[in-house]
Every structure is written in C-alpha cells, then in structure tokens.
Amino acid sequence: MRTLVEHRPPRRATPERMQRYARTALVIGLALLGLWIIHDFLGALVWAAILTVALWPVFERACRWWPAGRRIVWPALFTSLAGLVIIVPLVLIAVQVGRESRDAFAFLHDLESNGIPVPDWVGRLPVGAKAVADWWTLNLATTFDTNDVLRRFSHGSLFSVTREYGAKFAHRLVTFVFTLFTLFFLFRAGDHVKLQLLEASQRVFGPKGETLARQMVASIHGTVDGLVLVGIGEGAAMGVAYLFTGVPHPVLLGAVTAVAAMIPFGAAAAFGGAGIYLLIQGAPGLGILVVAIGLAVVGIADHLVRPAVIGGATQLPFLWVLLGILGGVETFGLFGLFLGPAVMSALILLWRELVGPRAEPVSPA
Image 1 (tube, rainbow, N blue to C red):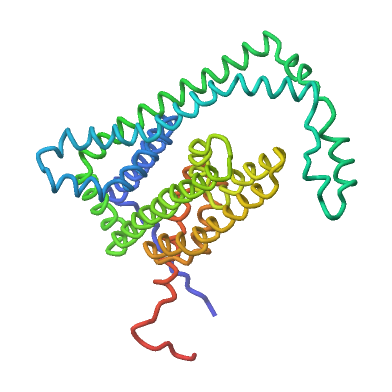
Image 2 (cartoon, rainbow, N blue to C red):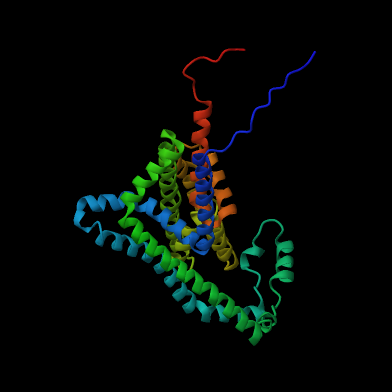
C-alpha cells in the first residue's frame, strides 16, 4: 500500500505580521533601554507613585474644597508637607544626637574606667542572686578598652569612610529631591495619569484589568493606613509610657518606636531597649512595666487594629498581608512594605476568580 503524504508549502509571513513583530520587538527594546537609563532613579519614581496613591484621597478632597488651586497650589502644598514629614524628624534626630554626644563620650569614659557596676536589685533576687552577680562581674563590671576601638579609625580610614558615606548621602539627597519633583508633577497630572493607566489596563488585560488595578490601589491605601497610622499610634502610646516610667528622651524614643512599629514586630526592639536601660539603671520593676505595656500595645495593634484596617481595605486575610509585608521587605527593602501587600492582593484576587463559582455545574466526568 502506498502512502500518500501531502506536502504543504511553508506559510509565508505577511507584511502586516512582520510589522507587528517588528513593532513589538521595538517596544520591548525601547522599554528595556529606558529602564536601564533611569535605573538609578527607579526608587524615586516608585516612592513618588506610592506617596501619590496614599495621599490622593486627601488631595481630591482639598481640590473639591478649592478647585482653583488644583494646578499649582495644592500640588506644591502637598509636596512640601510630604517633604517636611520626612525631613523634620531626621533633623530633630540629628540635633538630638549632637546634643547627646557629650553625654555619650562621658558614658564611654566611665565605661572604660569602671565598667557597668552590679545593680542593687541583683542582690535582692530570690533565686540565683550569686550566679547573676558573678556573671555580671565577670562580663559587664570589668573595664572596657574603648581606646582600642578608636585607634582603629586612623586618618586614612576616616577619610575613606567620610568620602564613601558623603557620596552615598549626596546620591540619597538627589534621589529625595527628584522624588519630590516627581510627586509634584504626579499631583498635577494625576487625573490624566489615572485615566491613561485604566485605559491601558483595559486594552491589555480586558475588563478584569481595571478591577485588578483598583484592587492594588486599595491595598496600598490599606497598607498605608495599617502600617503608618497604626505605627504612629503605637509610638504615641509608648511615648506616654516612656514619660511616666522615667525613660530619657521619651518624645524622641516614641518617634523611633513609631517608625519601627511600621514594620511588624519592629517596635519590640525599641521598647525592649528601653526596658534593658531601666534594668541596668537599677529599676527592674519599671523595665518590666515598659516591656509589658509594649507587648500589650503591639498585641492589640498587630492582632486587632492592623488586621481590621488592612484586611478591610484589601479583602485579604492578614496572614497573606503579613507574608506580603515581610517577604516584600526581604526582597525590595522599604518598598516591600507597600509593594508586597499589593502584589499578594492581586494574586489573591486572581485566585478567587479562578476558583470562584461557575455559571454552570461541572460534569463529574
């Protein structure tokens, strides 16, 4: 039996298809080239976008109250306020560090001469007082050679360290200024950018693209409220606790606690350090009280308030919010605080659409 094999002529690419392939390759190539050109400023663009999304509801309310200031006044005011919120705490911390430098050098000198003496409360321990006192005397009550640390910083190494950190500071300053410029222009053209992004998402991803984009924006709003606002509340509560327990500089330490509380479980380092300070100063009861108040505040904020705020805005279980925050910080640094939950929210939305109820029952076969 003879088998007849039909030979089909190879399909030739039409000019329209060739042009489409060439246009796609050109777009991808130009996009990659553009990202490579501005890669040093991608961080500034991302931060500007995050701040714009976070502040946009308040900005829109202000524009409805006074529409004439939408082009210049309100963008300039909101950009200035965002810059001051970042600059003022850094300046206050730098001034406070400069004021405390003399006390820090005095503490180092006393540490070099006497070490950390055994506190009185160690002798009043009901169990293990002698063992704790012996350990403290062996490890903490001895003298420290702080001059050996200072000798390591020779003139050459000090110059190189200053030059390295000076270059990094200059780069951070330029990035910060560029972030503010970008933020100003995003506020001015926010309506047009929003419409263009929604139109692009609809053309590329269809009707689900707009839903996905709105879900990611809502997750950023919820994350900002849940991390920043709740963190400020934790810092304020702990600042009052620091004030009444005698911790030095309660306002400054409360601000540090607020910043640390924006990262889950980060506030424990702040109030834990305050508790250790009171313990060393001979006030173990106050130290335990500060730690207990801190655990209560963090427990309420992280297990009740924060899940309700973030989960209510994103319709996302707090476990996935927590994984998005921690994984985002591990992968992207501070950007991950906001990008991580946004990505997880989009993935959960896609998963719910994939496994959602069907219009018709599925056949057992």
